[in-house]
Amino acid sequence: MMSRFSKIFNNWKTEFNVRRKETQFLNGLQNLPEVLHPVAITGDEISFSHSGHAGDIIYSIPAMYELAVGRKINLYLTLNQPNRDFTKQMRHPNGNVMLTEKSVELIAPLLLAQKDFIRCEALKEQTIHYDLTAFREFPFDYRMGSIARWYFLTYGISRDLSKPWLQVTPNESFKDALVIARSSRYRTPKIDYGFLKKYPRVVFVGMPDEFADMQQQIPSLVYEPVKNFSELASVIAGSKLFIGNQSFPFSLAEALKVKRVLEVFPQCPNVLVEGADAYDFCYQPQFEKIVTTLLG
Image (cartoon, rainbow, N blue to C red; front, side, top):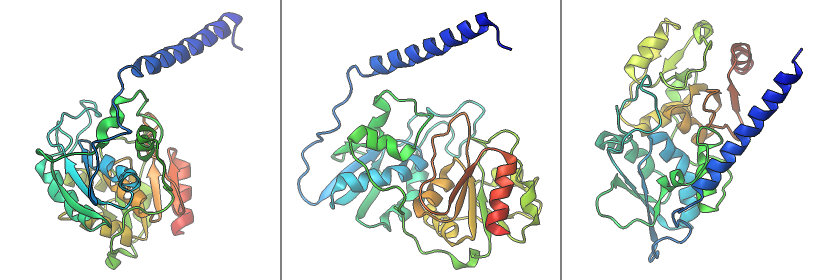
């Protein structure tokens, strides 16, 4: 039984943390950037910039459509910005930066196939109407909530996130496949994918080192390389079921609204599933129950 002193201390600690976070928020409200009234937009095109990770770009698409109001969309990517989100132990394909020239090559075919997108290239000296990375100038705990809604909070907009915001032609050769992606980042402790080895066709998309690691749990796992993110989205769209953690492939699954299961990282639960055919877990029994229910 908790002692009277322990109760007093716990209450004080809770109150202290609440007040500390409130103070941090209030201090962060000083000198905020002006984002609601951009550079005057003329003509039928609108230009956005983004310097964040590829997944952040996918989650920003609903905001782009909402801000574009029917205009054609130019997206310019700021390259070689220092990685601000990962610990030293977390590995990322781009190393210590968020976007590279290779990132543009990978994501451009996917975005240029979307309605109203007409340019996707590196930022140089183009005129920009909205800097989509401006959300980071506002005080918010970005380990929490929904990445897609961070843009809504920044620009005073909203959009129905239960509906698809990416369209691709599904790769029908994966219609009998369970497709998975699991980065070395954002792995929930004590989660084991080994039970998936009982299914006849399990395919991995992602980096080769991530595949080699997951193959230790699922010896029959098959690797599917892709040449760009359009191909990756097509594989995910064509799958029987997609399972992923909070990494780029899951952003595609969420945007496509395929049947999907998300491994939630409890220290940073900033990816939310919305809409039909969406499931999430952070405990092993629930993980196995979901997959068994969906696949039998």
